[in-house]
Amino acid sequence: MFTGVKVFSATKAKEREELGENVTRWIRSNSDLEIVDRVVAQSSDNEFHCYTLILFYKHKSQP
Picture (cartoon, helix red, strand yellow):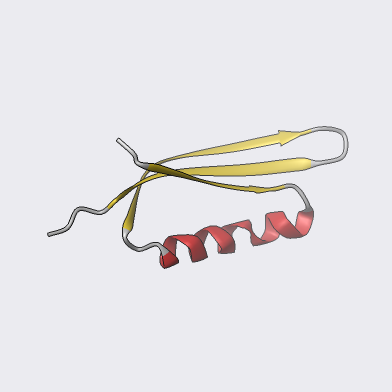
């Protein structure tokens, strides 16, 4: 079960290059969350390629 969703997407080449760093930065800054699932998608047309990463998360249980 999840309680939240975070969506990252990038279309431009520079954005695609930085996508992994942006995801890592978000995960590190939200250490109180546990990623429970993820979906990765790619779509494209004649001009653009779009990458999308969807993270499903929940708050970590308190010990």
